[in-house]
Image 1 (cartoon, rainbow, N blue to C red):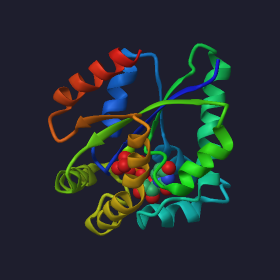
Image 2 (image 1 turned 180 degrees about the horizontal axis):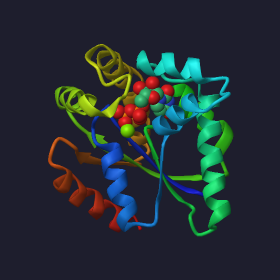
Image 3 (image 1 turned 90 degrees about the vertical axis):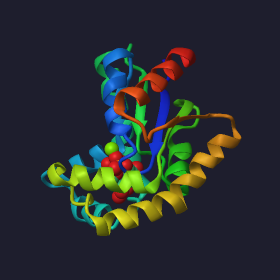
Length: 196
Ligand code: UDP
Ligand code: MG
């Protein structure tokens, strides 16, 4: 079975990770956060990319796709090798720019199906407030005002155009993510039940 993929996109702090955790409780999906995979690689002893990843994340820039796609495809392969019925994936926080999208196409066209994009739509103000709140305990090096301004710029300039491309293909399912976790999840659930 080919991997069936839902890309999960939205600004920093839009709630992608939170909602993905709730999805996997009730649906047969595996959650892969590109950001978490990169942070894992950054922390891995002997990683040749640790420094690079660290500086890109602090700067709110997008890591070269070769690194990210390797981590994603390895995680998908490992999941499916352990259990062949686990071929549905939520890929959270990817693709974030043209380089990411091209890298995905080069590596995955014909090998995985992108079913749709789940888009958590949220104002920049709400995104910033949530990340600053999260920053009090997240320990993340990029949940501070300086990094956040750069992350929002990257999101607006690089990620929104990717969402628009999928929009033109009729592949975006948009959720108003400025509401409470449970209200947002009610919409997410309805979308997933409909899409199967
Ligand atoms: N990142 C990246 N490529 C990806 C995903 C994440 O380079 O495909 C980097 C980027 O610097 C981003 C950071 O990791 O700003 C944090 O991403 P994450 O998805 O964890 O942030 P969130 O959107 O969940 O707040
Ligand atoms: Mg996240």
